[in-house]
Length: 222
Ligand code: 5RP
Image (cartoon, rainbow, N blue to C red):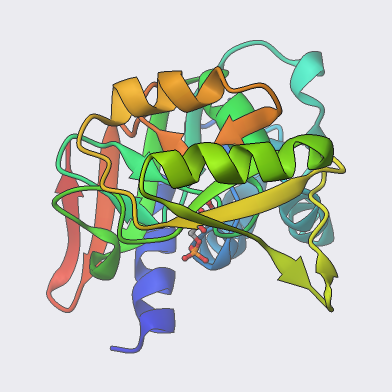
């Protein structure tokens, strides 16, 4: 199976976690795009979605799925999103699609995080994938030095020769060279640094369920 087919498989499998009659939290990325396509087939059974990015909002609306502002609704039953890395305890690295801040907000508003990914995302320890960190631009160089002190190498994510600007009007640092052995402590620590909007470690908002697409089918890790 191609990676695209694996993503479609797991996107479809996530439908069984959508609670009929309840608004669903929707993440961002190529795997979630497959889930959104699948959600289109049951759109009459859900009142709508809370979306984690402008890109997902556009796709949801194109399928006729109503998108609610997070402030219009209360707790969500479920949030479905992809990951760049996931460990055996449901801790993740996210933000490859630059949507980590809104992803963390919608995840925090949801009772259950269902992570959908292909098996290549499963790791023993977080840190192989460059860690995305959303930052306030004036703090960039100081935060780069703070990561340097931890042995990391942070680079501003670029798009068309300019720093990429997130949906929130901020920049992204991608940090390599980190070994994140204690994701909870690491997330809490980096979140305290002035100018950090969101660090892409999702340990406090970890996945309750992970659906992993493999050649043999979808594995469920809980
Ligand atoms: C976007 C994310 C994505 O969930 C993550 O990058 C995985 O994306 P994909 O499904 O395209 O591999 O965190 O900010």
